[in-house]
Image 1 (cartoon, rainbow, N blue to C red):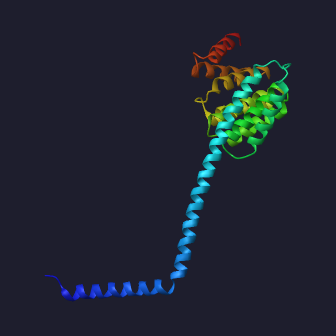
Image 2: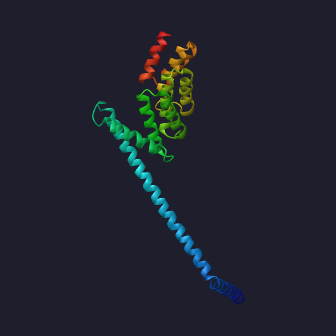
Image 3: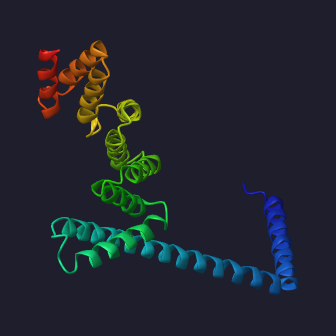
Length: 229
């Protein structure tokens, strides 16, 4: 059976709470309204901010796609063409602007392209700095291993074989054999070790490359080197 006294007690407590709440709202209605308005405005602001941020990000992605296309176009142009220098200068300015805007793929790719341009111009120190900077910022993406490989190539152009070997070794240690640049890095390791006179280590590296990537271009080159060493 239902205990009427308990029900009445519960109703009484509920009624008291309701009255207390109504009294509190009545006395502090203005305060609650102000707080509510502040919360609503803040939520609207967050929504607008998020929308603007997403819009800016999309613009940057679209821009880097356009700049990559322009970079490819310039590479195929005659450097003596009338509009070559204008397009080149505009591309450089836009890449520099985008690379310093934020920490996202578009900014990293812009800095990477600046490294490519510097490398093609023979400005190997500048290229190395750009590539290594991108590597440091994008280790979780494919650009990490690619940039580190290019930094090693720039170091080789600077005749700094010790630094180049360090970067190629770092690439294998950090990204493993799954990295697209792994076969090239291993071959470069073996080549530099051979050049420095460390033939046993070079043989071991070439053998590792031949075992890991037997059908790749670099794997076949490694097999040829092993036959000669």
